[in-house]
Image (spheres, one colour):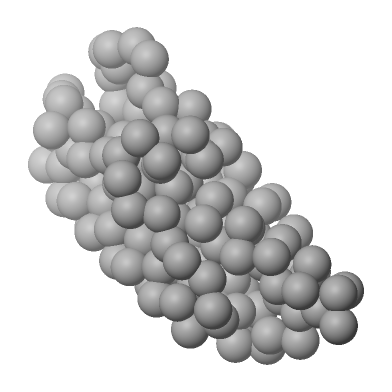
Length: 153
């Protein structure tokens, strides 16, 4: 029984970390949406809007999943910054390329973390969370490919 509680606590911690990650990601994407400029403005302004909307919806999804499995989601900006593994924007981005490179880096990091989450969900006998994580990985891998292609990489 103690092992089950430990595994559940690890999954709860992971889910809360992702609540924080996606909250921070949403704000980073929102920032990029506002400040993108140049010849790619119309394309990227709209793409980045879709990205921050997707990310914002995942904050809700991770929080609700956490409640479903007996956890308590974090809900304050302070807690988000304490629990995130993403780096908050620390500089002014001068061009769309550096913005997209940051998005690619964050998405790649989250894919790696979500793969770890799949293992935690498997250990907790939680196939619903596994499936949820797989869906996000699929989305991010597609977007990473698309953004790299946009950058000619």
